[in-house]
Image (cartoon, rainbow, N blue to C red; front, side):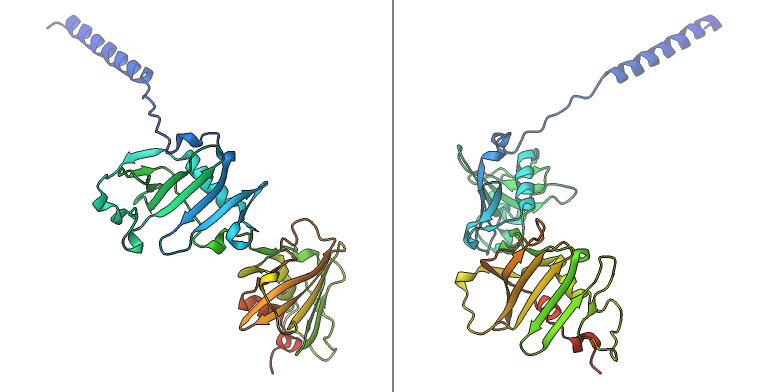
Length: 327
């Protein structure tokens, strides 16, 4: 074959390669649209009026819409945190089917999607009640072994699906509730006065916001705190106080006087007073009065009592001797 023929063949080969590359660039992969888990939820989240969660071996939890928020009927309509409700609804609304798994009922227990049997084999049952449509019910099983996703099944159907969203649900009834009692910024607290029947009075105060630490009014000149910030933990309790449990006041009967009372003042003129009652080995905080507090600084309700964790009560009940340390 002559040199001219070889040149022509090489040129043809180059042209073929160039055409192939051009075709590959122009060819776009077809986009596969995954099927929505609940197509009927599209644009309908505002119509969801209640959500029920039934975990194996636990009482059913129900939250329902109340105006612009959510409440728990079993807890005398106490407010529920908006975030977990919004996250569950968004996950269900956005969930897409990734892969069809087994349809063999004998395998449901391994996947946490059985409706009976041992607790660890059973699914969590999630129900949405809607204004103008039938409830949506989903059995939620184990998370995907790798990456993001959840194994789910619709009751009455045998097909198990892997979806592309995690269905994250609070583990307990308490975890659904808005547990905030106080959220008074530490920097805004001017004075905290605590009186105890057996241990006397402890008054903590600052003259200006710029003062980093509280001083103790009852501290005499011959005494000194272990550190300048030793008393700060007591007023700091009110910056992020969450209850361990809550109950309407009308459901509780305190047979003895309060073991502790307190009053708090802010630099902006806010005032708060309350007391703590002992009920067996539990301590319950009750609001007496409040005035001029900024929005959100006291999410607690005056007609409810709030059970404190032991460490919360112990902090609030700190005495002068406790601050000084036992000699």
